[in-house]
Amino acid sequence: MLNSIRIFIKVVEVGSFSKAAAILNMAPSSIARSVDTLEDELGVTLLKRSTRQLILTEKGVAFFEGASQLLTDTNSLVFSLKDDNQEPEGLIRISVFESFGRIHIAPLLPTFLSEYPKIKVEIELENRMVDLDSENVDLAIRIGMPVDSGLKARMILSNHTLVCASPEYLKKHKEPKEPSDLSEHNCLLLNQGRQRTHWYFKKARKISKVHVRGNLSSKGGTPLLEAALNGTGIVMLSNWMVSDYVKEGRLVVCLQDWESSLNERTSGEVFAVYKNSKYPNPLIRLLLDYLLENLHKKTS
Image (cartoon, rainbow, N blue to C red; front, side, top):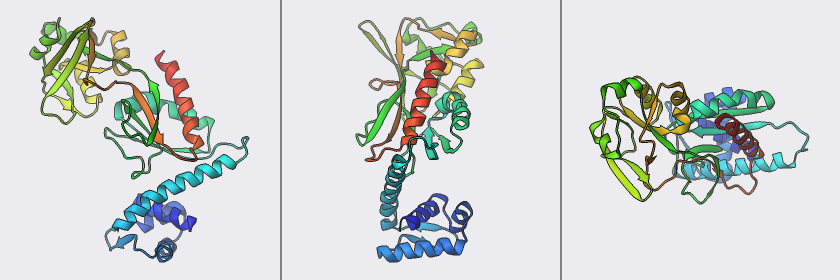
């Protein structure tokens, strides 16, 4: 049954028998028979089939989620039994928010893969919260401590935010001296799904909450950074995203005597989260250790 489960999961992941067959180097008819056999053994229909698409039934959704976890635990258990001297091998699926993945994670992967050539990495850069179980993700990198107690988390990078603008923008507009001055500026905004956006500031016992507005918003920081570099407005972004441009003089830090934040309560630290499995995937630990060591070198 385990092999049929592997085939079923691949069919669901790619959305068709023919695509799964190409990936698994099998005939489409063999893929279909394997799923048929699995359904017969379980006594349920997992997939509704038409000429255009495959759709999971309600029981198929439940089985896929459980089977994905079962397969993860099985692979991890088998891996843990292997000789410690054996070369690491297997697949790691990663989800990283776009800006951090582009700047810090993607550049590290080639060296990691050259060091461990039998490991395969699938990475998605996306500015949304993924569900590790339903989307079959091994490792997600997010901002802020995760609220899901069923996940394990490791902080991989501390963080603070900076309010920045280009020298060209500040020549045309008076540099803000107090947080309240930002209401007179074009602020470039991270879209957090709210009607109104606020930036938060602290200095000693003083706390300031400023309603900010602007002509550009984005779920990811890259478009905002590009706009700030080209003099469009003032931006608040993480130090790991803007520090190089500050050193080069392409961005100027404003309100330096204030501690700034995009959120009132959550920290801006970057965490890696992964499933709390009975048999942890050793490849995740291997990749995490590598990222921690090399991110520290890069940002220190």
